[in-house]
Length: 181
Ligand SMILES: [Fe+2]
Image 1 (cartoon, helix red, strand yellow):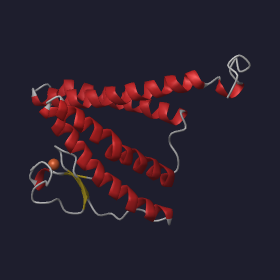
Image 2: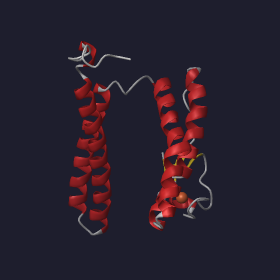
Image 3: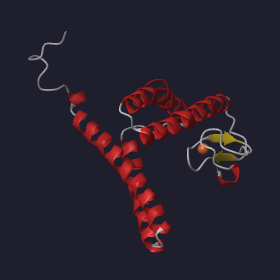
């Protein structure tokens, strides 16, 4: 075990630790601000303030660029094959540990709205995990994903490659409302 006294001050390679923590916190904060402003923009549109919506979207874009710069400075953006592995790993953690634990707590505390929100996310992450897995196999062999449409339920995030179902199997939204990428 390391001797606490002999090991102070920190070794040179540890001197950037505080900056790394700061960048991680800033990445989380900017990402959240960006998402919050997009939700605010949709609300402003719905209330008839189209130009306020435009302002929120512009600032959300700026915040997302800050988040991207922080992630880049953290070394968190690799090549596409590595990025697919990282994305798969993030989804797997959410499916296996994070959301099941959150769902149990929401149920215990009787928060039905949180329970639904968590169930939507957990179910969609399973779609993403499978899609990332097959996509990574192709990219590992230097092949891009095919140009088939990718469709996402605008309510629960259920994600399919190809035609939308008549009705979302998770939340019941009609397939005609799915967003196409
Ligand atoms: Fe859905």
